[in-house]
Every structure is written in structure tokens, then in C-alpha cells.
Figure 1 (cartoon, rainbow, N blue to C red):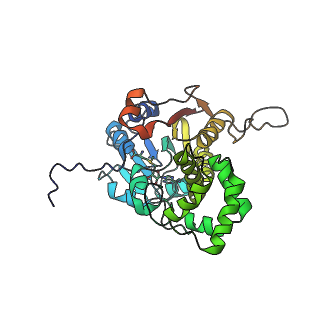
Figure 2: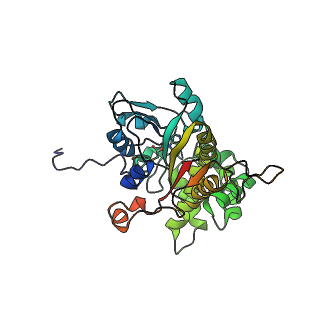
Figure 3: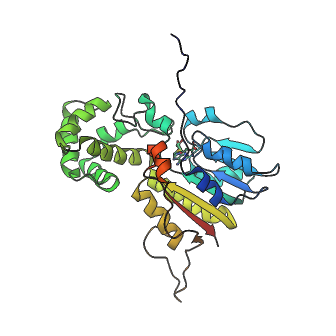
Amino acid sequence: MKQEGKKEIPYHIPVLLSEAIQLLEIKEDGVYVDVTFGGGGHSKEILKKLGSKGRLIAFDRDADAQKNKISDERFVLVHSSFKSIKQELAQIGVERINGLLADLGVSSHQFDKAVRGFSFRFDAELDMRMDGREKKSAKHIINQYQAKHLQEMFSQYGEVHNARTLAHAIVEERQKERIETIQQFLKLLKRYADKKDEKGYYAKVFQALRIEVNEELQQLKELLMQCNQVMENGGRLVVISYHSLEDKIVKNFINNGTFSNEPEKDIYGNITTKHFTAITKKPIEPAAEEVENNPRARSARMRVAKKD
Ligand SMILES: C[S@@+](CC[C@H](N)C(=O)[O-])C[C@H]1O[C@@H](n2cnc3c(N)ncnc32)[C@H](O)[C@@H]1O
């Protein structure tokens, strides 16, 4: 078949690109980390700002991202979760960094490739693993978790209004037949969805499952805690998140150095946990024009902080 004129689908369109790069305040000879490489959109811009002595270390836990690897001697792509950042950096001889960018969540490629099981637009096995080496997939969760655990997951990670009812319905259904595919799961979800907004309901349930499969919130916390240890004073932390659960973690970490509304204090009342200062009080959101060109940018919120 003729392929002429057929547009290639981009792996991912980078979000808040110029804002993120500007706020990273890149020093020519600095060492930078992009913990969510994806299609490499942000990484390519960071490399443009680095001189010959600068370095960029990127991470992605998805093997598919390897095909976007940039051929540049200042660049290394590590196939690992960012939760092991300190150990992975030590292995390549890096102890301190001058800046870190995290553009959280999934890439368009993951979302659009049916077989990955991230999207309810397709039929495929219930998978949703960003890292195919991990054992826990969406299928495992749906067929193995106890009702209480399912309920907590839907309620906390998806704010699903009828989380308890849904959890029990899943347990009942899977006793008749294992729930293996997206379409099989959707058939069940349809019975419990708000008829005025079925897609909104599916989106919430799928978000909850994805967060659980990939341990997204836990891994984000582990990354931030290690950030304290590897970042040089004055270094910049730039985090783009796509839902309020992530944003709250980042906000509390920057403001308090903890994952709650309060910092920890010693017996004299001195704050012991806070190591960053916010550069902007409010998170930065994409301009209307960016959202128009790339609707997937609409929920992005970027927070930037400086290591004290
Ligand atoms: C929103 S995309 C990043 C897109 C990238 N900034 C670009 O311009 O193409 C998020 C990427 O981070 C990766 N990712 C998510 N969580 C991760 C983790 N804990 N460790 C490593 N990579 C992760 C995903 O596999 C995905 O490729």
C-alpha cells in the first residue's frame, strides 16, 4: 500500500518544554538528570544548552524508550525506574547533580499502543505495566486483590464514587470467569458507570489501576527523598505532574520536606526536613495555545524549586 503523505505519529509531544528548560537554569558544564526520558523531547533541549563538559543522564523504565536514545557522548540512557536514582547514578560515577527534571505519568506512545493496555479505547490484555519486567499487571490486580484492597485503590487513586460496589462486583464476576481483557472489564464497568459520563468513569478507574500497577506515588516519593541527597546546593528541581495526587506530593515535599502538610521539627522547634525553596508560589500551567495544539497537556502542572 502507498505510504506517501502518511504522517508519522510522534512518540510523545513534550509538555511545557520551553518553560521547563528555562527554569532548570542549565549551566554549560553541569550534570543534569531527566528521570522520564520518553521520546526524549526535554532531553534534546537540555543537551542543546550543555557545553562539551556537560552531562545528561536520562532514565526510563520502559524498554520502548530505548529506541529514542540520543547518540551523543555527553548522554547516557539508563533503563531503570527513577526510584533507584542514587544507586544508578553511583554506578556510572555520578554523585552530585545540578538539576533534575521529572515529567511524570505515561507517554503518548504508551497510551496509544493498544497492546500496552493503558487505554480503554482499545481491546487488549489488562496490562498497564510501564516496565514489562515487573510481575504485577492490571490483570493480576483485578483477579487477585481482595475486595477491600480494590476498594481502597479505586477510592484513593481514582476518587471513584462507588468504589466499594465496584470492588465487590469485580470479586463476584471473577469467580465466574477470570477478567483478562479491557473489553471484558469495560462490560462490567458499564453497569456501574454514571450514564451521563461513562468515559469519565472509565478514566477514573483506569487511572487508579495504572497508579497501582506502576506504584507511581510511592516511586515519586522515593525519587524526591533521594533528590535531597544528590542535588548540589542551588540546583533546580523541576516536576511536571498530571493529577492532583502527584502534585500534592511534590508541593508538600518542596514546602515541608515531608509528604504531609507539616515539616518535621526537632525538640527546639527547628525545621529539620525542608531542603528546597519554591521558585514559583503557584504551579505553572500550559498556555491556552499549547493546550490547543496538544490537548494532553491540559492537566499539566509544573513545580520548580531550588536546593537550599
Ligand atoms: C510523560 S512521559 C515523558 C515524556 C518526555 N518528557 C518527552 O519529552 O518525550 C513519561 C515517561 O516516564 C517514564 N516513567 C514513568 N515513571 C517512571 C519511573 N518511575 N522511572 C522511570 N521512568 C518512568 C514513562 O515510561 C514515560 O516514558
